[in-house]
Structures are given as C-alpha cells and as structure tokens.
Length: 144
Image 1 (cartoon, one colour):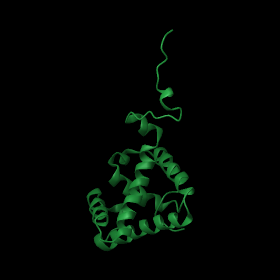
Image 2: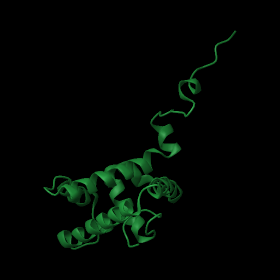
Image 3: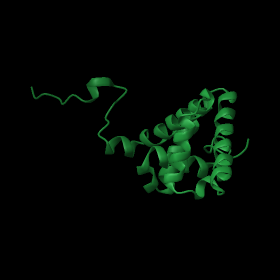
Image 4: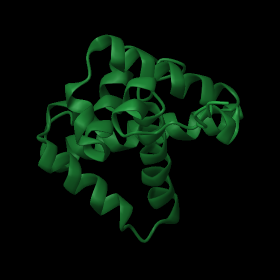
C-alpha cells in the first residue's frame, strides 16, 4: 500500500499526512505526544482492519490525492502547509460538487475524531464515562 493513512495501512510518512489532517479537524491533537498518536493510530487501525480492503484503499487514495492537491495548489507538501492552508484545502474539498471528495473529507474527519476521542485520556478530559456495564457502572452504591 502507498502513503497516506494510519499505521494499519502504509505507516511512516503516511502517518504524518493523516496527522496533519487530524489537527485540522481536532486542533487539540497538535499537543499529542508520540505515545498518544500511537494510541490514536491503533484505535483507527483496529477499526479499519474490520473494514473491506477496498475501503482501506479508498482512504489511502483520498489521502494521497489530498497530498497531491496541496502540492499543486500551494507548491508545498501537505505536511508543511500552515494549519490555515490545510483547513482551506479541506473546506474546498468538503464543498466540492463531486460527492466522492465530500465523502472522503467526512470519512477522514470521522477517523480523526475516532482516533482522538476514543483514547481513554481524551474521553476522561471531556467527562465521557460510558461503560459496557451501562448505567449500573455509574450508580453510586446506596448505604443500607
């Protein structure tokens, strides 16, 4: 597989592209440590592993296309663009007349949110306390 997504797909340089886009969708992600990025990447990798290979290829292709568009439009690689320019590029793709481009933006956005907010640290920081045990896990035992 080529460049452009999380470790479960191409890895290495591709992570930088995905991370650069993640920061557009979740500005707080700019402060993530390498370990926190690895955690987010693992979450996304597990989710994508359950999807068809065609879906993973489409995400990979979309991210490579965004990288090429950044180079054509701004004359610089996507990962070196300012946050403002990356945002403008994604906004233009998100408003495209081509449904596939809009879907690509929404798909990558969804993955970025998943990777960032599904980390236990992020969930705790926003007060998210859902549990597989349901409401029972949140009930405070009453004294007898």
